[in-house]
Length: 392
Image 1 (cartoon, rainbow, N blue to C red):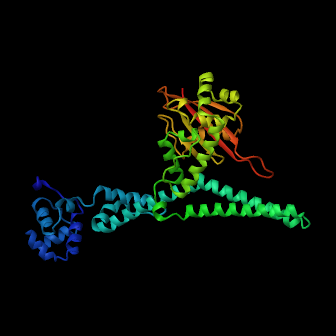
Image 2 (tube, rainbow, N blue to C red):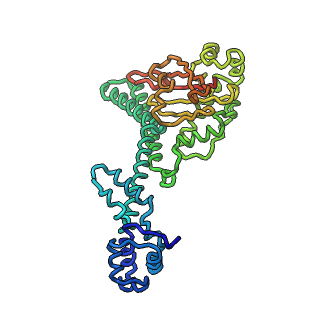
Image 3 (cartoon, rainbow, N blue to C red):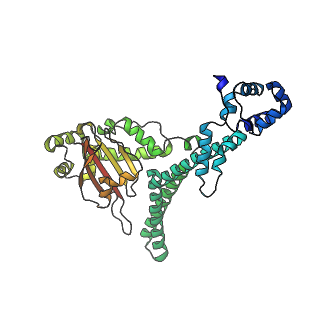
């Protein structure tokens, strides 16, 4: 079989590169291979094709596998060079000489492909970080807190500056408000700086604070029975930023569990079935609270999903129903009823969703968007969208 082995047109170039790297004279290599120096010279300049015993003899003398000399750079290396050239459209690379370059300078060819791959990975990391800065609920919440507090400080200070004859009691009250707002701003700033200046090991972790909270809630199917009975929550070991988010979730869960107890949910499910709007009307409670509670308690049934987003569309709760993955980002999300609800606040929306088109598996989606904070003069309302998904 080795007798029939044939080398490519660039075998000579590879032989020359290997010989010179080993600092072997042409005459010495020719002698070891049992051929004349003039014949070897023609081979090294790709003017004679070789194969069989001559190729094997030269490969043995150069202490390299014959296939390396005959086949040259691996297909992956050539493919890598082609991909590297395609990544820079403004530069015209000599693609017809890629194999020659890889054969004559395999080290440089490997360096180019690895650098190109590294640049690609860095660009992916940059895209991911940019996406987190755009959609990270923790960052969104902290920035909103800082802006709201700055607005309050500006309003209070303007009153103090414009009203020099303000009564002492009112002045003391405004000074107290300034102090409280300043402490809030300092706390929000410190939390944000701590998050952004996380240690390298934490910054390089695959999970964001939101991912940590999602993983904790997913492990418990978003049901916290200790809060249903008024006990303290069993929080896991989380990063500082994730812990802040988890505590906010626990506080809201506890407050809403007091408004709508698990036993009452079971009663209303028996009376109305899984019909959130009827339950909300029957209890006189806001629809978004009913949607969240139905998405938390086991009585609603298996396979239930719950999704929440803030006014920017960033997902802050993701309980995926069976067979229906909930991506944090993606073009298809804009079609969800959840985002239709954001454009129509306080209007209940019901829609049927197909899990897999044409296979019959369907979900009923109940979506509703409502303001979260009490109205204040000159401040835009903060919307939050909630969507309950129930297998049809």
